[in-house]
Length: 395
Image (tube, rainbow, N blue to C red):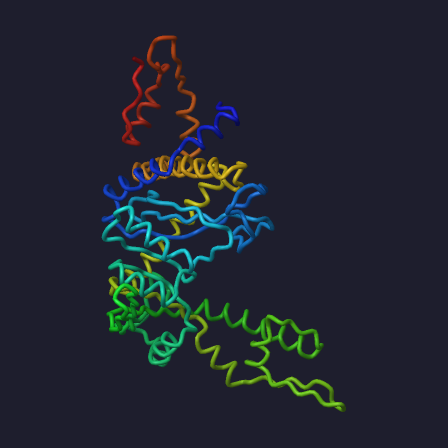
């Protein structure tokens, strides 16, 4: 076991140049071959000495300051490719441009990104086009250009030919024109042109029922707040959007629902959309998008199996080094899980069970001699072979 002081020294000794070299080698080896899921998570901290620890949107709902961690994860390889530490108050949508700068610096080419709707903005889409990257991004149905396209297919969306039994969804796709804009300060001009984009529209009947229930609950809450005159400043726009409020000395407060506005909002319940500049088929797009949960599982492995729910260090240098060590550990852990899956080992082992089976192998070293490995059983040799790892030698 490495003492705490020694581990802090080890973490602090890892240089930025070493990490950059590692990521550049990663990119040369892997980045051209698959879609990469990009997401962020929050890591809470008790430390008051870390410069980027601050309050933000905590994805674990901890009431603590935090740093954020961004991660790129391969959807085919099931291996992590890149990570970046962010200040705790940086939102998802603001992290994309810095990601693109890093990808360019590290020499990653032909990148294909999958991102959820928290990363969508017209600025980010323009930046993805400008950097010649392929993407699949979720976005809100409430955007004007999306609402327009959904309205055009609304009457025919639930026709039988649009139903997909594998996903129990109605699906349609449209090729649209994205109004691309790029300001070039060094030339003093702005490029404006149309770019091809595929808009994939999905309708989920079950999701519509859930959304309606939630929406009705919200309307009831808004109405009660108005009638009781216990107003919430954050709901002011919603009050005006969905209710007509009159106050008279005799009748007091009268609240009348704006039925047209309520019906218009209900029209979009059950819909969700994906945008891509490469994937034409709506089912292929949906499959790719849902596979992005590999990055969410990776965050789970970092926090639970690799004990990263808290920063656990008191200096920026130690934190930077610890995150890199944890990232390398995540690569190993992800590789073992992938090989277990490929070799059908999960029928007989959990991940922890397999690691425990191999953990009993002893390593020892005599003064002046190289490291030696203790006896290995046939069962352990078979596990190493199944993982495509050369079993350690007794010599």
